[in-house]
Image (cartoon, rainbow, N blue to C red; front, side, top):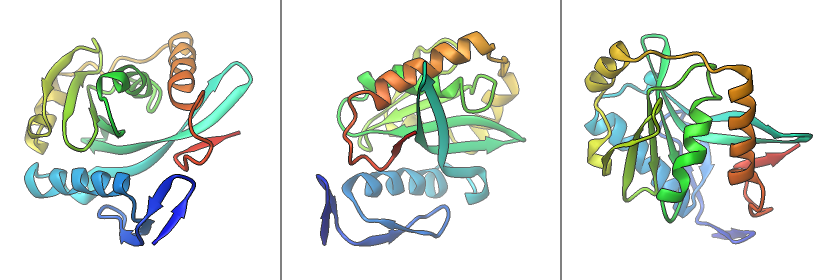
Amino acid sequence: MGNQGHHLILGELEDLITGRPLADTHDERYRQKIARLLIAEKGYLKQDIESRRELMVQAGEKRAVIRIDLLIKLAGRVCMIIRYGPGSIVTRRRPVLAASRLLTGYQIPIVVVTNGKDAELLDGASGRVVSSGLETVPTRLQLLEIAAAADFNVISPKRAEMESRLVYCYEVDGSCPCDEDICRL
């Protein structure tokens, strides 16, 4: 066991999606729990899921790279993203919605924010909460149906700039310097 900053390192674990070794932290255990839920209970295939996608965000001259925990890609498009964060999930809604408008150039239909114990599913286009609880994360079949009805609207450059500023302000400004999920450039 080690300690890096204020993040307790409990050893090493294997990422369920990639098979790569990761630092075993309480936060990483929750991320792996969510990945197991997707595969074991919701019917997703490992190849449907991308973990730790990097996202460049910018506010004026300030730039940083953050990580989005899980992306679900079906029928050639990212249809859902999942962002984990400890504590209150209500305060995490807006930055994850903003990220859903930056990752692909189009609006990702389903946005999930979770603390590993609870979750909220948001409609990407409207931002409204459509359900609560990890058990309401859509199955693979349900997400395929949602995606078939989704518009995947293109995000304008001006909107993308504003969403990027928002993510930067929420996720980077004031964040802990030892947070390894953020890389200030």
